[in-house]
Amino acid sequence: MSDLTRNDQERRRIEELHELRAAGVNPYPVSFERTHGAADILAAFSDEVPDALGTVSIAGRIMAIRKMGKASFLHVMDSSGRIQAYLTQPATHVRCNK
Image (cartoon, rainbow, N blue to C red):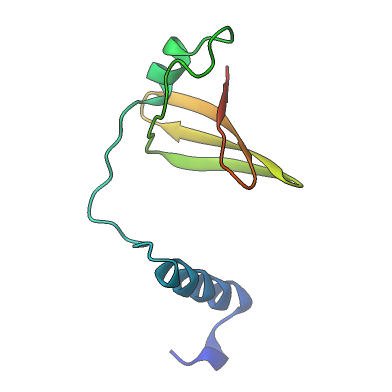
C-alpha cells in the first residue's frame, strides 16, 4: 500500500513503529513475563508502604488513558480485574489506586 492511500492514523502508527525499532525496542515481542494480575496487585497494595510490591508486570488491555501534562492515568483490565496506573515523566512511576 503506498503512502498516498494511507490515512493520518495509519501513517502515524507506521512512524511510531519506526521510532520503536530505532530505539531498539521489538514492537512485537515473542513473549512477555507477567508477574501479577490486577486483582493480585490490588490485594497486596498498601498506602502505608506503596513500594512494597517493587516492580510488577501486568498484561492486559488499556481501557482508558487520560493525559494531563507530564502525568497520565490509565486503566488496565485483565482477566482478574481492572487497575488504575499513574505515570509521570521523565521517569515512569506507577502508583496503584484502588
